[in-house]
Image (cartoon, rainbow, N blue to C red):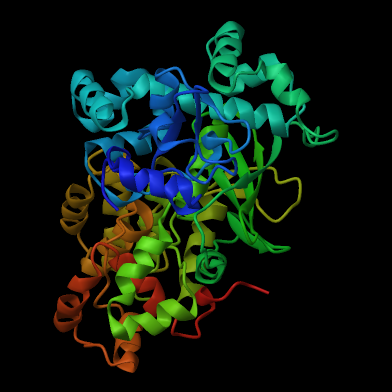
Length: 494
C-alpha cells in the first residue's frame, strides 16, 4: 500500500464496488450527485464511477462541502495505517493531531513540537491530506462530539466543551455541516435506551479495527507484564490507569470478534479523544494486518506461523516515558521481577487514584516524581541504577523526549548514547513505545530460540540478513516468533 492511494481512481473504484473494508480509513469516496462521503465498504449500492471522487481524509471531504454518510459513518472507520508505519513530518503531525495537540496548543504548538514552521506543516498536510491542521483537528472534534451525543446522556453544552469546541454555536454549526443533522437530531435517531449510562465521566464505546485481529499475544502481553496498581486483567478485560492532559482516567478494554469494547472513566471529559487515540495506539488498532501478513508469508519458514494465527498486533503503550523506564527495570531479569520492581516504584512514587471497581490504585510515576527517587533504594545492580537515573534525568530536563511525534532514528541515537542502553533495550522501546513497525530484536533469547526451531539462522548477524525480506514489518515478525514459546505473554488470560 502506498501514499496517495486516493489518486489511483481505478483501484479506488474496485475497492468501493467490492465493498472492501480493508481500505476503510485509507481513502474516502465522495459522491458528486448526493454530496455525501462514505467509507469504501459502505453497504449502499455503489454510485456510478463517473459520480465518484476520492479524498485522502474525512477533513478533505468536509472542506470540499461533502457530508458524512448516515449509513456507513465514515468518521468512525479505523485510522489510516500510514501514520503508524511512517516517521516523516506528515505522519508525526497526524499522530500529534490525534493526541489532541492542536486543541490544546494550537497550530503553533504543533509546529514547535515538530521543529518546523507552521507554513511548512500547513503546506505538507494540504499536499498529502487535502486539509490543514485546523481542518483535521475540526474533523476529530466532530467525531468526538458524535461519540458523546450517541453514548452519553450529557447536555449538549457539556458535550460541546468536552469535544473541544470554543462555543455552542461552533459546535452546532460543525455538527450540522458534517452530519447534515443538528446535535439533537443525531441523538433522536438512536434507538430508545441507547444513550449510555448516566454515571458521570463513564463512557462505553467500540474501537473498530481492520480484520483479522489475533488478541492472544496482544492482551496476553499486556496482562502478563501488568504492573500491580496500574494495570490488571479482570473479567475478560485489560484495565489500566491513564495519565491524561487534563486529568486522569481508567480504561477497560475487552476483545470482541469485530471490535474492542472500551469503557472509559475520565476525571475530565476533554480527555476523551486523547484517551481513545492512546488506547488505539496501545492495541495497534490502525494496523493493516493483511499487508503485514502477506509480506511475512513470502518467507516460507514464517508462512506457517502466520497462517496458524493471522492478524497479530504489536502490543504498545499509552505512555512512552513510562515504557522506557519499565524497559530498564526489565533488563536481564524475569517478567515477574520486573513487575515487582515497577510495583515498588508505583507504591512509593505513583499518584493515587480512586478506582470505583477497586484493583487499580495509582498512576505510574511521572519522570519528575522518579527524579526524586534515592538510587540507593533501588534493589538493582549499581550499573543499572546509573542507567535508571540517567534516563529519568534526561526525560525530566527535556534532553530526551519520547512521544508520538518522536523521530524514530533520532530517538534511537539518543537512547544508545545513554549508559546501559544496548541495541535490545533501544529496539524494544522503538517497537513498543515509539511504534516503529520495523524494529527488530535479533539478540533476544526468545527470538533466537524460535529461529533455531524453525530452521532460520539463529546468530544475530545472519538472522538480521534473513529478516531484510520482512521489512518494513519486522516488529510483527517478532510477535510471530515470540508466539512459538509457551510464555504467558502469548496467551489470552483465562
